[in-house]
Length: 289
Image (spheres, one colour):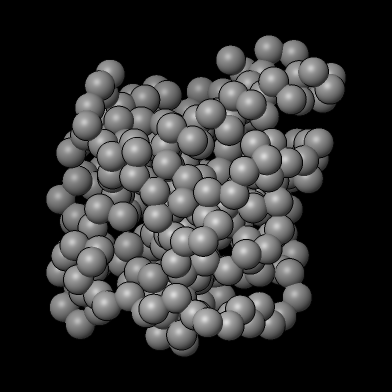
């Protein structure tokens, strides 16, 4: 996406700075191991929609968004603010998968692109912000016609505040599992277990441990589009939505080819709404319109 961290120095550099491997001539092997079991949801009961998407209940609450000055890998646009999420909502337990995307749109934007392993449980990548928004609208229409949508609800992208709140799941450390990245490999696909292992693609969802609220891959695997326009300062307060206009849309979560600092709960990234590549995906929320 827009920024990348040097493996040796931790400095930010352009995504093209690291050499990208040529497209594999053979299909990469699927990562070994069983699908991880989710943690108990925060409150309420999880929902399953008509395209096989599990939606986890996220409670209302308050938290500190951003990072303290002492956090390793912190960027200048992470100054901490107090935020209140006033209404509960549902968030997809995983990013949208290729199988789910095909059920709603019938298309495959990742087809023929580099650094992609195809599979129903693999993240839908090469999706720009506009495509992610269009998917949410189409899914809302599909579920409403089928009578599966709660009254007055719709699918949409999470706000940046909702995303970080859900990622932290009540924690205050750099990662939802603690302050140190030493256990990142248990929870995330990142540079250390993808590019460094010559597995240069987004991996099947929910094959790593979930956060305390049962959300998978909030750290690493794919960067995730948020609804907000990007601003260099976080907007605090109640249910913030970022600036009314801008140039770039917010991305959160880090990606499979990135170093641990880019996978922190507070890490922020941005790009043009028309940008799409092998490390970009999204997850949806279900909330009152």
